[in-house]
View: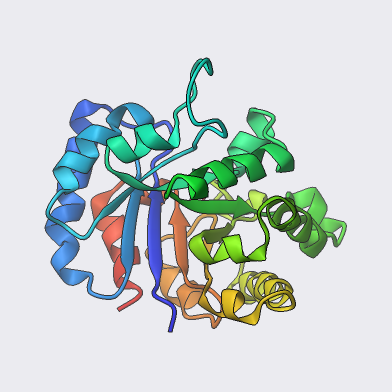
Length: 250
Ligand code: PGA
């Protein structure tokens, strides 16, 4: 049985005060979360503060990105060691906002994935199609291409130490959630594709859904056979909503 994971992607939101309030609200509600693994990914400048506040709870912390290099002259980047040093066990890689707005290619995302793994950080590897791609019927091809970039660089076994987040771009921050059937279909495709190379890796792999998941739709999505949790943006910014999604796994 794969454990359900609920990860909050706080994106570029919050202040010193609001992140403290948010993490303490989540921590206070953790007694009601017995099944899901819970991860929060704050903006980098607040990671240390959030890790400190989460200490002593089951909440894990992740970065929103990770540099493909291990250190040196890479202005603006954050290394795996820095993430670990400030309490992270996870890092999101390849989020569609990074791909679309900051030019991260499949190849660069694969290198960031590799940097995470070689340094003991678990990548939460995001993939997913745009609306145009869905409408032209290439959803599976796009997901396969994004996954193949990682498999080509790192081999399929590398996916065993990672989490995949399927996030249809058209569902992110739009309120337009994929139906459970639509999401399940792609999740099953992803797992099947990986199973064709390594059945054991595919069976153990947590595949999260992301895109307008909220307390109202989480249970049905997470109830699908190949959906192992969620990567949550907007609804992760309110402790009550985030906890309600975590409880959908109970
Ligand atoms: P959303 O974002 O839940 O606000 O749609 C999800 C994500 O971008 O990870």
